Length: 294
Image 1 (cartoon, rainbow, N blue to C red):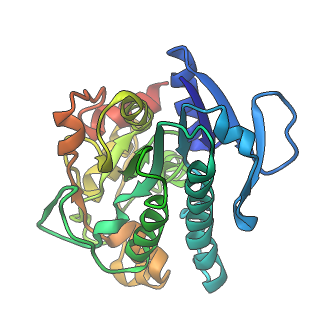
Image 2 (cartoon, rainbow, N blue to C red):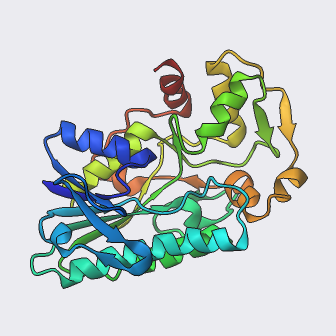
């Protein structure tokens, strides 16, 4: 397939493009600067513009673009950037697909498990209701924009959690743990919805040829608490993790601390599993072991 990717140079995008190209797909990329190669097309999410040729030549569009939630603190202005970078980018692509003379057949738009909010004790699936909090509201607006794509284009809103790899949430965790500063966050009993980087990209790739549409979770098949995840990282690196960051200190970070570290979300992926997808890394220990040894 000819696949147009927004956010191709990012953490997930780099791995996704690698896997797509390995399978023989042709990749083109959306960039904010002037295109430098034949496979690049310019767009501006903030101005809601995209080169129409990018859409016309694509069989599928995958949108991974959005400001990082890992940048702390979330000031009032940065929270607006988190929201509008997602909503404007998604709406730009959805409307461009609708305006195309020959629209792509597939639109895969990234989303997040933050939709479910803090739900300790619950097993959350695609049928679970919206939760409360800043990230939950962001996801609702983000996914609403994706629904603007025309009905003739199969649209999937895939929700991911903490991606286990050498990037994203693990960017600070790996060096801190290596230095012996690994820590438990709050009680450590809150569930963190995790998924290996390889499986994140493989799950998105699976959706290209699937018949699934609507919301699809892409999260690891075995639940894990935040304490289990940080301890597994310390063990894999042969380090101690004796420290505790108390909940009150995390709450001083505002919404960023609460939504990123204290929220409990045990998110399952029943639709993806029922569709035949097989996770390479079934436990967080295996996923963490792979990034430490690679």
